[in-house]
Each structure stands twice: as structure tokens, then as C-alpha cells.
Image (cartoon, rainbow, N blue to C red; front, side, top):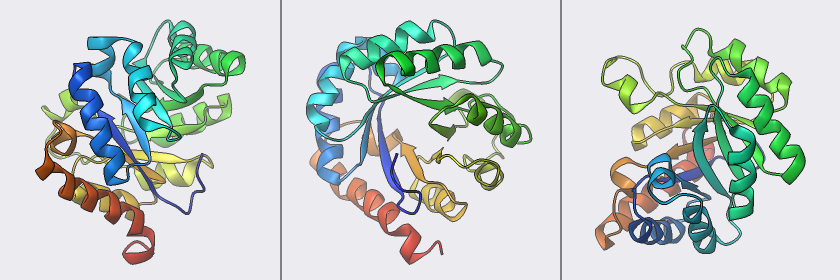
Amino acid sequence: MKENTTPWVQAAIDVPDMKSAVEIAKMAVAAGCDWIEAGTPLLYGEGYKAITALKEVAGSRPVIADFKAQDGCYSYFMEAKKAGADYATVTVVNNDCGTLEALRARRDCGIKVLADLFGVSVEDAPRRAQEVEAMGVDAICIHFGFDESQYNKKRRQSDGLREVKAAVKIPVSCAADTLEEAIEAMKQGADWVFFGADYLNEAKPEKLEPLKHYVDTVHNCRRSCCL
């Protein structure tokens, strides 16, 4: 993982088809994104080969397989590593066994494990983060899901982030689909942010400038506005 003093940016490629995903990934690399994510819709649509295609674009940048895996974690993580993934996500709410199987895959192939707190309440997040840290995961992802957001308009992506960050010693990330959310996450101590939404829904020349502005703002955020 990167040093905790340096924030970085994970670009979630969430389109379902390979051709669009590759072009968006190229745009993300051009904008300076640090990590490239094969998003859940892309993995559903194209399978493991999408990881390989994005790794070819990403080069030395890490590639994340965003399975949000709950069952069959060992095989998913092993196959993701074969395809070129450096990290993969496991959903850890009520899922000790899946988390342990993801970690078994890490022991066997080297893929790193991101623990997604999707589905964990704000109140329970610090405790659960400590539990999976003790199991040995590499980092925590705070993620308020799209479906959840349709029924809870008050919660922000970064709610509870400060408390989780204080509870663990490993890096903590936060979903941030707007620049405002990203800045708030940085203020609360996020080590990195992951995002997609309107920034990464298609590859067009007019998308590059706002995407680069987002990336540059996050990269500069510790120094310029968050200390």
C-alpha cells in the first residue's frame, strides 16, 4: 500500500462492456488516476478477461477486481490474480468465512484483500473494521451502496470514516463520486478515494479536464486544505 500521508485515487470502471471500459481506463490513466478498478458491472458483463484488459492499460498501476465477494471467495481471488489483479474486494458484513477464504487466496497467490464495509451500519463500522484488521486484511473500504442511497437520502459516503480511521492502523478508503465528497473524505482522514459515476461513465474529450481536476485536487488535498 502507499504511505498513509499521500492520498491517492482509484478509478472505478463500472460500464458493462469491454470496449467502453478500455477507453475509459485509458482516459483515467491520462488524467493521473493511481489505481484502476474493474468494477462490479464490468466483471458481471465480461468476466475475468476484463481484468487482463485493464491491466494492459494500467501498466504498473494496481488493478482492483471489485467482486464485493461474499461466497466462493478463494476461487474468485485466485482467478483474479491469474488475470492480473493486484487487489480484490470482499464484502465483510456477517462474512468471517468469506473473508478468511479471501485471505487464504492471498497466502496462496499474493493477491491483496480489500475489506468492503458495504452493508455495515455507521455505528458498527469501527468495531467491524477492527475485527477484519485482526484477521489480516490489507485495507478497509467505506462504501454506502447505490441501492442503499435510494432509501436513505441523509447518509453521506464519508459518515463514520473518521471513527473507522481512528479504530485501525491499516489504510482506509472511501467512495466519493463527487469532488465535494472526496474533499470531505480527505478531511476525515481517508488514505484514498474510489469513484466512478459521471466522471467515468464514458470516454469523451470533454470528460478529461474535470476528471483531471478531481484527481489533482485529491492529490493536493492533504497539503492544500486538509491539514
